[in-house]
Length: 638
Image 1: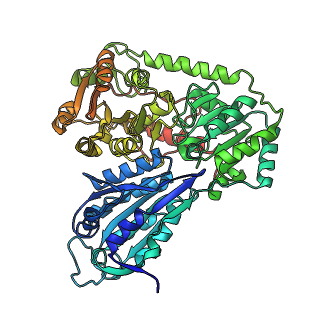
Image 2: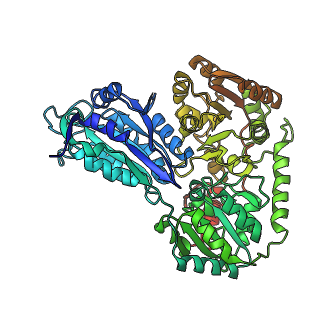
Image 3: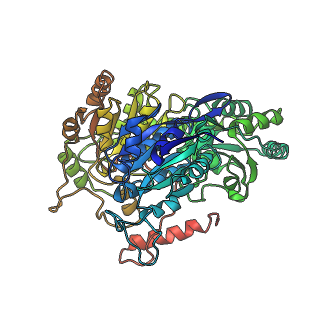
């Protein structure tokens, strides 16, 4: 007779999590680092009790907002290159539904995370229990069904023995590079405390082997032939290239055959920006150098990319009459995009197999790569030295705010700093090993165009879902993954106001992060989008009921939480703040007041397909609608 152990469902869950390991390239490590929690009814007496009794090696952190702590878990796994995860538990009802946005972010970015939302009673005895929604037409439906559309695997545990199959299936997804993403296991709150005689073997050490997928010989030969037949191939470095740790292979193929590298947000810092053939970000937020290369390419080699609209400029940036596509990805679904030649395999392994077959091949770029990069760096230097004046200032985002309005902002915020000036200076001041975390607003544009990554895996952008409020929680997650490196959260005032409470968690557990807040008193990028398509500024500036620009002292707020803070209105103050912050052991906050419309603008090839009204009293809106239709006429339709 097989041995059993009598455990509650929650105890069995924690015991199982402690026994999960992964093996990559022969290196074996625990897979589940720990658990974030906000306890309430539905999890405090089950998972909470089990963790207090015996957490094993799991590190346990109390979050302050459910979405915030789940964002931190997403960032931890992303910064760990998907080699480790945190689980997240939340109470029944609104506590659990607060995790849905983070689940969507993990899904869009292919990041593994284990979500454990508390559910209603399996017995239904107390129905409707506190915070339960009743559905007269479906007695089985709960709010946790909302996770189905944002989970790679979803399950509901209503009996203790169901936990076993749910976890086995869930961890196959979590440890599979092809399907990695959020796993949601909703546990009924009565079942969480119920006990069962679990087979002891269920808790044996389990090693999940994440072997690198090797492409077929046919795929490799076909790919190498297509590259040799091209004259101007360009490699788009996506997140899959970073997770595969293919830096050396990318540098080798690029150097040997003079192939330019351009990056998505997820792929940036796979190779350092200083590499001579690295042309920076591509697409809507791309550099002129990267976009120019792609526009003149006859073969796009997409490595680990999903080809989102911001990468492809809504499928308008390519010369579709001459350009072919070659896609390398562990996910076969992604390789089919743009009618590409498909190579289903790990990026690192695929490049190792393809590169030797290119032999004496050379592209026809010659010195163009160097010239394009030099031109862009000259433009970056100009942006680093933009200076405001009260009479004849021309903002980077032209034709939207008048001089009078810009002067009003200068007076209200007591600043003459431009965003590009402060941003590029901060890039210069940051340590080479510093990790920067961003997600939403105008700053991802500056990050993609202007940030020079000095070390690998130091550029951390959540742009698959571009979640406002990810930045500070994400910085905490990145810090947990890389405790010896400085971590900077790069965000605007809009994202800060959306969600910043994991700053308290960082202080509580002495996990120092640095918040670099660029305050232009409004939702700057959406205001740009609005006015750039013919609309008036409406509902996107932070003005009070008297139309006065709001002045918020974020430094004082950070100080109230216990952070070391800095009020910054000049480059000199920024330099002193960065220098002093390095000495601090507590989290810091840089309250940098910058002028609106001074972020970097579009490069050649930048265009984004957004819905524009076809009927309006404004001529500029109708003109924008007409221009959109003209642009779409030359776009790929699928």
